[in-house]
Length: 179
Image (tube, rainbow, N blue to C red):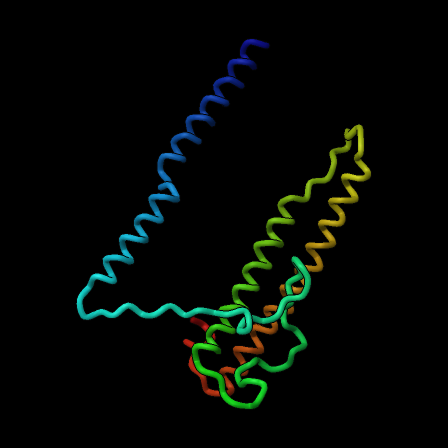
């Protein structure tokens, strides 16, 4: 009976090792993907009659402010979307697009951070021997952090919706708020 169990464990380990090796061969390496992207970019730049579009540089002044390290400021409570500048003049379309991109980036970053912290929560098992209480307290703190970030995420999404509504009211097309 013991030999059969050992044999099945060794067989299962061999199959999983083989499947991992086979999976790794199917996916291209990061270096290969980067080379392909550079080649595509070089080829598109070499096409005659097609001028390269200049890159848009987004400065810190154009991004929504963030407070504290790791605390994502969702921009909630800031009122209407910043479609017009503080002095009342209309902003350029590129600036407005940059604000939408920055808000969407903030939402995706916050969601990724929530996912990362959520995945790291592991409570001590019932048969834990040492430092179990401290471990579980740390995990509870992570849960509270996730709940706080989820609230911030909801506020960021609400702010994005307000920005989109304001853009619609000012007759901007969806290409402005959904670049």
